[in-house]
Amino acid sequence: MLQAIKNLLGLGPKTDFAALVKSGAVIVDVRTINEYNSGHIKGSVNIPLNNLSGHARKLKEKGKPIITCCASGMRSASAKSILISAGLQDVYNGGGWQSLQAKMRS
Image (cartoon, rainbow, N blue to C red):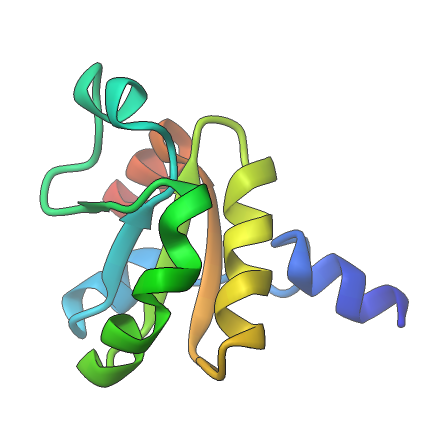
C-alpha cells in the first residue's frame, strides 16, 4: 500500500522521462490555460485538470505513454490517478513542468 502511494505521487523508482519522450510519450500539462500560456514544455498538450476526464478516451486511443505535469506536482498526481481510473496504464507523474523539463535534459 505504501509503495502504491509513493508510485502515485511519483516517488517510486526513477523514471527516464527523456527516453519516454523519445519513444513518443505525450506530455499532458494539467494547469489552467493562463498558467500554460505563461510557460510550458515545448510540444506538451494543455488539458486543464478539471477537463481531463473528458479527454481520457482520446489519450487512450493514442496508445502512447502519458506524462502528466503541472506547477508543483500535486495536480499531476491527481491527473495520473484520473487517467489510470479511466483505463490508461502507461501513465507517469512528471511533477512540476520546470522540474520535468530539467529531467528531460539530463
